[in-house]
Image (cartoon, rainbow, N blue to C red):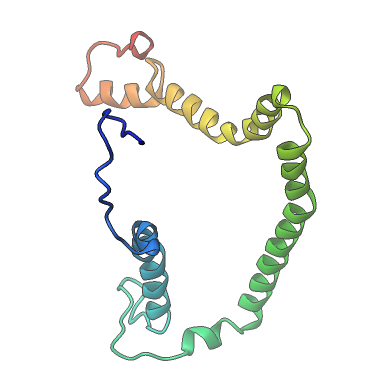
Length: 163
């Protein structure tokens, strides 16, 4: 006879839930954080701006924004953006997917971590540059300290290195 993790006999009772019930939280997340914002943006795209400093009004919906997109200036920018995105997608399909497949199936587990790490390291550059920028701003010789000192809010240095 099978036993449960607590050592007793199984009770034989299970909650009878439909199989899709496990997907409900994921669908709720998708609807709340993706579908509703996209529909909201689509709705506002039919609106208009009464003046440059006012929010978008939706009391009179029209396709005017979409006809403006066909203007030669906007259309040239749109086609350039579309061309770059298609090129990026093609490069991902031609380079990244075969590399990922090779890394997942052909590389020994000893080297997978190193090769995956080498792929991820370039994405840390943004974080590193921002960290160095904050360090420059917050040092005792930085512009933030000078501004606080000239306002009279600081009379001693802030040493962030000891934190």
